[in-house]
Length: 224
Image (tube, rainbow, N blue to C red; front, side):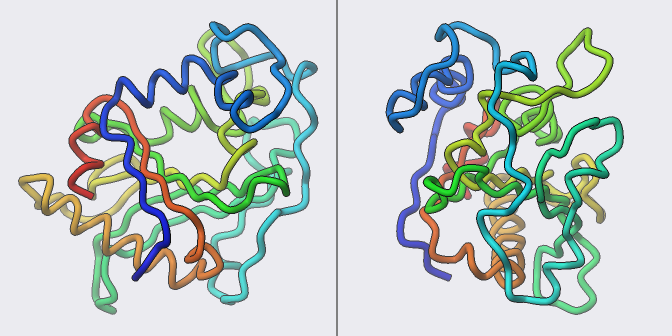
């Protein structure tokens, strides 16, 4: 499997710097700055442009339909979050494979920025990637002290397709018996998952691929 550009964010500090100062990304992409650079990721819904309900990418493999998530039917989310794809993907092509990683893929909501695919994982080891999705860089957030999710005006999906993955096996909603003991084995799990993922979502194969994370992900990502 070949991807034209592979860029790794090797340290948690670099990743967190981008999360804490999202306006820097908007400036680099020529997008308007909607708030001071020291704002938290989450902002009030009325300050964010509405999310498009039409996907900026479509998939020809019929299997992709099995993973489709209707953005109007996400529990507790009282607005249309837009289309996405989520579910369990095996880490190998073995038809008897029982180890599967849970993912949630969100396409870019901006048709001008569809050439990049960002993979996001949290650290731990064993920390759910959905902490990042729901608290930091996802299209909607459920911040502490709020009664329900809100739109995230600083979502990374404003600039890229993003793939959040619960890994390694045994993390979050992922399934299977955890049996790895080092980062090399973890990298093999992820490589197997990514190969299976791109077989189903083959239109993503030509995208520029970036791996990002925080905390212990600074060890995960160089190995992957």
